[in-house]
Length: 326
Image (cartoon, rainbow, N blue to C red):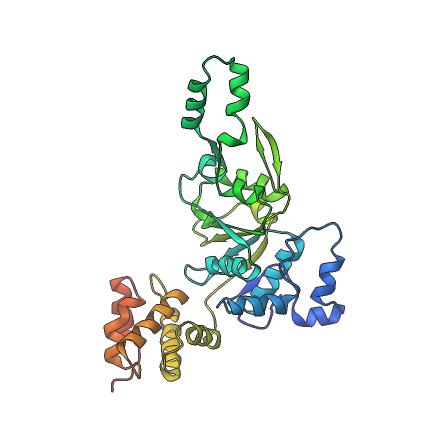
């Protein structure tokens, strides 16, 4: 269902403004009517999400703000997909900042395993304890060395154990091996972790969970079912100009407008790597540092390396861009 904002930003779970009116619901009432659901309750409404994220410097569309609010109210993990550099990770950071929560981050990569994601035992400390207690029986020593004192909590366990408001960011989930998804299913399904030597550790205060993916690998349907889904694409020209003005306030408005037009034209080309929003901001800062008062052909060609990182993309852009030659 379209939200009527940017066709590039799509939400798989949510209601459009017209549908909300038709059902006669406000999001504040919705929060009170979800029986048996314990969300993180960071925000009061969709408008509250949008306003508080803006205070952190993150300009969210209605689609983004709505999905964040629903994840907050329903206590569901939020899976965000989209191209690199569109603000997926920054959204998690902004939610943490806006809600005054600590941010716990699990950076995924090929080969990340349970000992890096969940927990591991401090073997060196255990060995020292055993050595110091040579006169003890094994049963006494075992009870001691398999206590929480010797447990090294990794991001998933850290987020579950804490009593303070927490945002758990599982970043670039698609880079992890398929096997790690089985571990995530237990954590995200019941917000609990089983340590054989200690038992089951349950979250007293479930975290707000954000998973990001660049879609380099298809995530399992089982993992997707546990999440609300949000796709963040490149922003429309109006929103991107607002972002540039917010992040680079000293840049001339005319230059900002011209810059976004060039970025939009580049994204319409079949490039190996289209410029991200982060690279748009870098380019704006570059132009400000150079004191550019207009986006001339010479300025663009001299600075294309800020936004394009492959020579064949530079050559294609150089040939196809229609620029001011003055």
